[in-house]
Length: 316
Image (cartoon, rainbow, N blue to C red):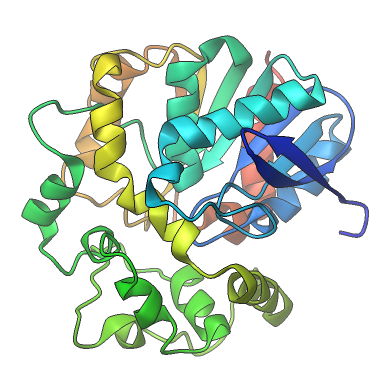
């Protein structure tokens, strides 16, 4: 871990913290919620050992990267803009892109906006979700799962932040990172995150040191920047009207755990396996469903995920 280099790069009006390792073709790794560059620690080591230059930034609002105050500063256009600026500043023309959770959503947007900068994409957990011009996404989630659904809960400024503050941040990170139920994540107002299951012990793939690293960074930064991604879901929908119906035109491999809560959203499995996904992402080459694996697969099965990335990108 001490081999990993840490720098700060000025891009798109913010300073972005970047962890990197290795030399060779560039792999850009995008983390999700509630995570950090640190979620890719194993893949940084593995990919660099295979002859790649692996780069994992803290996305806007996270870790040691700046967190603008305005909610509307967290749209897909801002986040992809940060990343394009980062590549320009580092003199990198094209990358292999890897995303997980919100990082996967941002990776899809990246490929929509700037496919010219992407050699190939390995995306995890969240498939491409084509824009439905008839319905705002948050309305769709609310209709499907009700007001207690976490995405709906996260919309209100200050409310989830207050809820998160009721418990120790390390305990909160355990609750989130060790979530293994494929059922919809609901956070009722009465119980808040205190009502989420407390894992009795840590699994072999997550240590107290790991938990404490996340907790320390979120204690410094707070959760508002991270939650603002959810608050921009409907705004992204408005801004992306010009891209309605546009296909993802880069080579893609998709990896998901069979216990991932996203995989169990009604209609998602059918979309992935029955042709819808392939229609929207015509260069989709592989879909991998990992057995007995939950949402945070890049940490839970770090070696396997590293191999999945490498086996795909080495073809290009």
